[in-house]
Length: 70
Length: 210
Image (cartoon, rainbow over all chains, first blue to last red; front, side, top):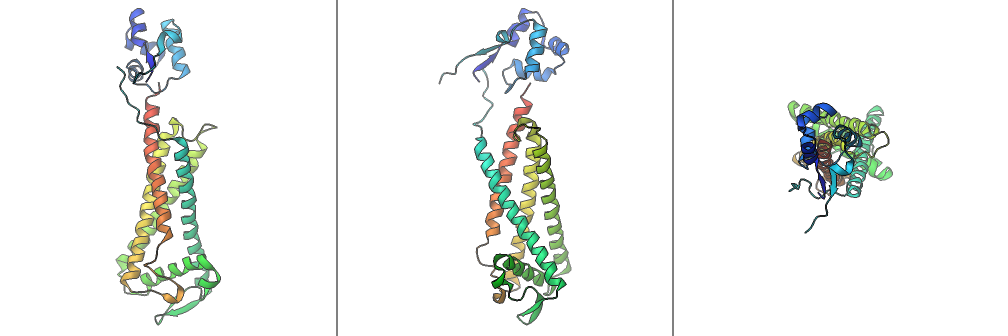
């Protein structure tokens, strides 16, 4: 998928663990892992909003479009 | 590196076309069965009988010519009734066939019930949304069960007709001719299978939505 998720980078910058983020925003650890590892097919605006609020960042800091090369 | 999870998605228009064909086919089959029952009740109520191979059984005497395909369905039902009631069929076979027919109806009604819930559950969304994946799969399995039972019933009926050597030329029944019901059932089974497969895809998409 050409959309890359930089959740691990943002977590490292904020010195947070995935478990801590999961507790802060009320999303299951399993779902956050799916997002962090790039397995997610879709992302709700409500989830994006909660993550941006918890990590004090913009959606662009979390997501990046990278065209696929054959 | 991001793992590649998604297979090539089935085009939605293809799914919708298949479902439309399946639903039309399904309603034709249901109409056929309902027509059979209504005509059977009618003929039983009016005690219309004709002799075939020296044995009397209930049907519309020359309805095959006057009522066309619908009467033909009635004639086929009459042949089935004759096989099961008048000829030497073991009671276990008779009740087995009735049980099979009842199961066919139960599964058909369950599938119809799920279809209504499926269409009403979306609140303006497209019915094939990831949220509806589980319902889509369940509906597909019930439809498959229903059509499978229906096809088994049809096949057994034809086998009985062959085994008892009733060709009933007088009322136009030939167990060896091409049966359109089989083709309709095949279309319906294809639709049901597609629903199961697409439902599983939607379920996966829903599971990977965060």
